[in-house]
Length: 197
Image (cartoon, rainbow, N blue to C red; front, side):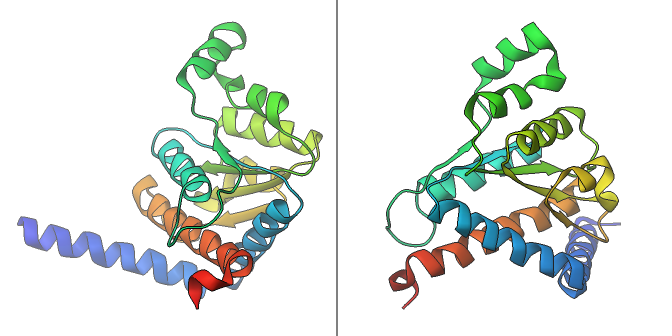
């Protein structure tokens, strides 16, 4: 297979995963619930936290900076933070083990008015699962961006957005980033309608 055929095959596969996600009524309802929860968090003065491993950490960081920085047009900064500080993570991993790198930060920062967006393509990452459990114990709204059926995390989240067709991390993460952007836009349209006039 030449490069051109490979690229077309990849893009066709990605489009099929995205189409399956859009056609899934449960997934669409979960996305709407996610947007509503993010908006409610911001309106009550809460913070949106996020966490993930590897590429999902990059997506968690991207999610946070779109709130605190700028998405489409200038507007007030919104409170959001990804649990991605390498000093904090290495300290916690050294003292408590890597499974606790996010849960400890939830314990330190999270309040009942806040929301945790937890990203895991497998839904079974132990450190993300413990973060969800810590968040629920503190009364945070917990949203999971998941794949492969949702794994153990599906039941540990208040809202589970599960990519129904993708079986590889890249295809799942491609949908996750679209969900992140759609949720931010939905909340922004309510908070800053002038940006969309």
